[in-house]
Amino acid sequence: MSVLTKMNFPWLAKMAWRDSRRNRSRLFLFVSSIILGIAAMVAIYSLGDNMSAEVDKQAASLLGADLMIGTGKEVSPAIQKMVDSLGDRRSEQRMFPSMI
Image (cartoon, rainbow, N blue to C red):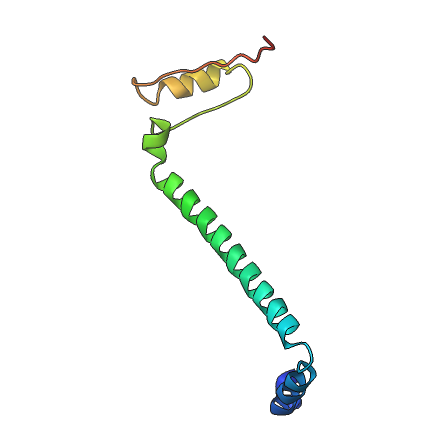
């Protein structure tokens, strides 16, 4: 049995309504703040999930390629040989950090 079935729920609701008689406007503000907070969190998470799914769906056109390999150090000859075997159409980008 759940806790709510052990308690008398109609009596509990009646007592909560009676206790809120003095400050119903404050109760309404509290409840609406909770509802708006939950709605904002759901909207933000939904937007993030939708953006992530859209970026994943359009990754090839956004990246301009089907595959991207990145590293922060020099590529070893074995890995370079493997990359060369993937196909003949490729581009290479090098970035140099500077403090100009």
